[in-house]
Length: 110
Image (cartoon, rainbow, N blue to C red):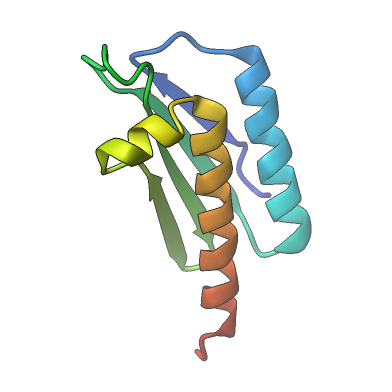
């Protein structure tokens, strides 16, 4: 990648372990997609989640030559919030979505 990985934490303490996990996901994407020139990952803990526990939104912006692909992973339904309340599950799902978007973008002409 031409630009360094940018990782941001909102409403939660930064985590070296989480940043390491993010770096592993990004390295895997960069190995499969050499035209990836930059990546920004934002982890945000949602407020007032006393019933469901900690719920996290994950935003990923993948920079390609001439274009950015944005991925947003947030549980929108109550049962989703209960099914995946931890940041690791949200992160995994966001990077799975990013991989699908890359594949879809790669298959498009032009």
